[in-house]
Image (cartoon, one colour):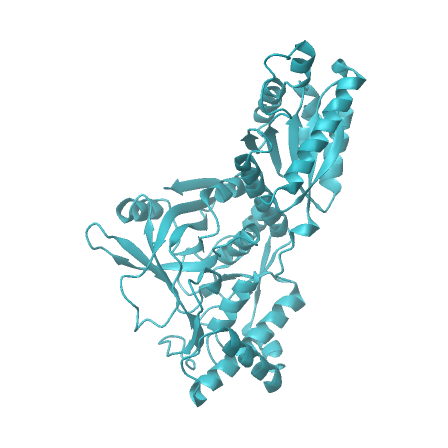
Length: 475
């Protein structure tokens, strides 16, 4: 169920014109639009297929095109382009009923002005600079949320910006059917992991419901020793395993059963995101650290301590980042390094950091946890590859949701963390720790976040626009 498949989606490309220009120019408009669509579909930046729609020239044609897009379950958004001047009043009724994300592409079929040969016919036909402003006005007049991309359609930057929007549109479509399983409750007395699940479903589309640990235990208990042993052998093939003693193997087997059982529970219920909490481990041998790490790597959203908003947003970020290098993970700010001129943050969690952000081969280890009152749990230990990234979090402010994003630079730890046997990452917030942490806290940013080396602020801006929520950017 966690598989992310862009091939199931489509984007409709709607070109606007009018009958003023006659049949010959309108045929050229259609041919040029097909040329643009073909080039966009050939781009490695855009993971979703774009489908050409016949040119709309009347109010009725606009309404019909929008209704068809709305009704198509594979359609995750529309791209609109005004090849010629397209009177905006004819777009009003259609745009009023549009409920799919929209990108307004301000481009033209010719890259350069043909200075020596351009005549009035050419200029009337190729006047997106004119038509797209008329269209832009009516979108703003209607309060329509959309992304505007300007430039030649074959420009790599233009294709990148369309690709970002397409990935976010796919994530938005995924969110409309997402089911989040809250296994146990949230950590007691914690505020930020709470929130209004009904409001979240209205705003973002996903549903979140609670399940008792025994609901999952049924699936874990059904896992045979043979199935678990086979998975442990797989662990040994793909991870560094420093110790394989009797105690470690017992923990590995328990972790393997948890992974197989949890996956079966999630697949059975159609869930693509879930939470756990160390305060509710009834019947479990150990906190499911390794299982959560590996399920995240497969594409599941996850939140610790019952943090369902982060679990859902992590799944959304996983869809955005599918196939991109760098990875996306659940994260928590843990401790500061305040050395003058070298200030930074150590991020980690008890166990649950996704190996998609690992710098190298993770190490599979067993160590005491100190909280939870269970057996020593297995976990993957690693550090993160240096480079740019973002931390992002969605918070519930009661009357609205807010997305907070902080750009940052991941760096190598100063020294080996020999006595900290968990996955961790070290970063420098932008513009610096002094300002970045203050502004995050002032905005109400949670201690849990989505850490995304694979994504940029542009993805978050597109998501906030589609979701209709406010965004605070720290950079």
